[in-house]
Length: 414
Image (cartoon, rainbow, N blue to C red; front, side):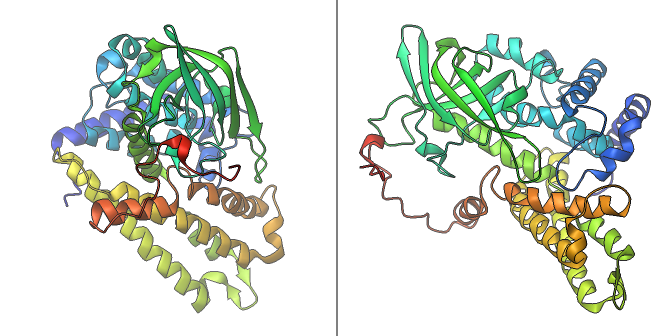
């Protein structure tokens, strides 16, 4: 591994640093620096409005969706330049949270499978923050089995009529467009009867119902479709190729989540350095130090595994499974660290507010949010299967429904 920038990379980093220093909304720096635990919540600003303003400014300066081709709103930057930008953008990158699904998942899918007209019409608007996209995959009856979905699309003339339900759709309540996978043929095995579309979220028949979360926020939604009309021109890939198209989205989703997920290790070290227990500072307690050391080792492993990917990118190579491993380990650490911090706090862990309580409230938010990080982008079990089968070459799980037509698969109601 080589941790040093090349002269060209160093020049790019300096240019990016100067632009950020001149244009970043520094009045939000303190709030953004404290929001790495749990979810981002700004006291006097709406994250969508602030995010749109930052995204627009980046697009005007040529810093949005750097790795995308220029004709689609990007900069045609190299993969390593994208990594450098993310490093320099730092906490201000949290302002682009409303666009992460569009930039990291939907955009690459449209770029890979959409018509040239669709690319030129939508990608520049996505890059500039004018349009926000969401991902309509998960369903109540399918769980982690995306291919078990039941939302159906039926062809009528040059249009498709969609009926069904999606759930856990992040950002659907403020999105302009959505990437939708639906069943178009129930008479073939479940992976073969799917087709991918994109649709206007303001289309007649689309109903979005926010889900109230345990941490008090409303980021996820249920989305219902009642006779929603989607033109065939908004189909991505061929009819029945939806699963192949979805793999593009899922691959980018896991990479996006794995590369940005915080673990809470630095915050826990700082907290333990100031928390007084009965016998003195928490960080002086041997049991606490043992826990901190264990997480420090894991954090270091994640860091250098990430550097391996960066080093590969710098050489023009494709990285291996580093981001899947990072997402799996980070998600578990996030929950374990939050649980331990709450145990150290005792009854004080229920407090939220200002001053010292803010730190305690952050770990509380982290604990309430952490389970979703072990589900989003693939559950721990799904990721372990991927690593086992595609990296280690172990035998795949037995699938009794592999060659069974979807409408012949037994369900509870039958």
